[in-house]
Length: 245
Image (cartoon, rainbow, N blue to C red; front, side, top):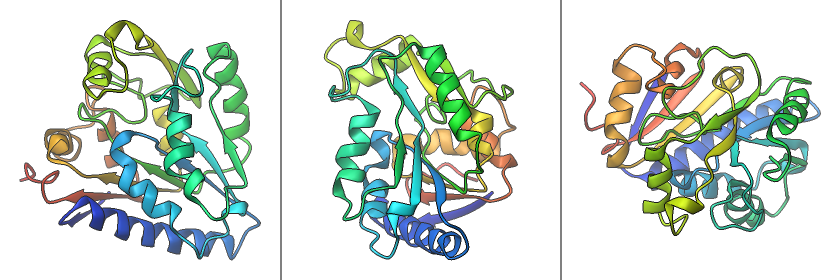
């Protein structure tokens, strides 16, 4: 795991996008296409925008997998992660990605996990573009997360603390509206990415950053698993890195 520190979230977005561009150009120079994971968490707004502005990439040759979606949520709901992806990433691009493997929130969750799992297992994932949550979550794998399952996608329970957090973020008006479950790419599937780019801006992530980097790997801080990835680069801002020793 490699750590890089920058002054602001804008710098993180610019530098991470430049590094992703170099990686994708290298891959597309050797292969027909590339497959990547994209995190659609609200904290990734600037980083997603930086990726979307890349003009030297033939995005029509890039397939994208989304990391998660809330079970039963209408596709046009403001909190839909698929909608967020469309609004802040693919909808801003001059050339759309070749394939976007969306998670169908209205489908039977277990059936949807099997469908997506079969697709993602067909070929390697070259890049995981991810963030972490304030509680150290990775994708929608909130603590304590399952670090061992080999299933590519799984149905996860959303605890009360995380559901209240979504209300505080104004993604839902009331706690009762927040789905109790979600479909998430599993920790092990994320770790199968050949390279991982993890962008973490914001002082509210400082404690999670300290725990994921300086404490042992634990299900209570799911993102700590990135310590075990040989090609993970963590892009930190000065404030998100403020509690590091």
